[in-house]
Image 1 (tube, rainbow, N blue to C red):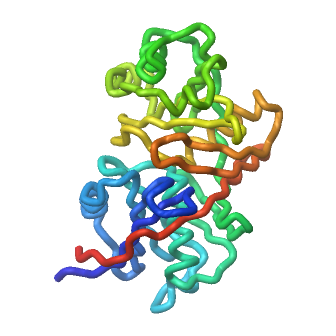
Image 2: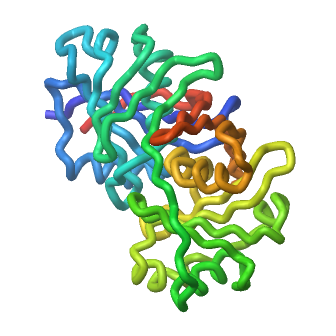
Length: 288
């Protein structure tokens, strides 16, 4: 027997459709779980950055999506399940608040990356994520090859830092402007093996912004994403990286991918609060 589930496509870190980062959101009732294998298959079928599944925890029954404030949340790229995903968390909270009639001021999501809290705020929704503070790496053949695959060259002036938790590699060449970052034409797939040897999950090219505090682009062929348009999790690494350089704790960050994305960040000792808005583009159902 096929079971029908609601499904939404949401553009996150976006104020208009077809910008920001896409997420598929599937509300999964507590009494109708979806097998892991099917979650993987549906994410591959959706073929967008992430497809996320949320299930109520603290309130079960007919009105559970309206009344619960705690949910399990799992994220899948077309190829793998991931530990942390900012834009699909924002999208899930947006669906609860704006499509499923949930009036709670705060949502808590139990995830592989820990408990994530999302609050309603003036800018839309504000997420609290644990920091993943990157540390400088010494340039070796692998890191030089990764830099080359993104920037087209390697230079001693480059700052390279790797975050211990997510294994995100940040590369910054102080001589490169925001426009240079936007114009990069990376060939990261040429450095796949180098990345695997260093257990890198994602490479981030970053630079000082013009209107914004900093800009970035995010490449993740190791987890099935050539370029991610707007990446919440990357900013758990970028916020502490730029805090050291700009001596501040509040930022506006722009991800200058083709679709683009804008994030407001507020840093404290152990967390970063990431704010953004989202737009629902597609509403429908799927039979599984």
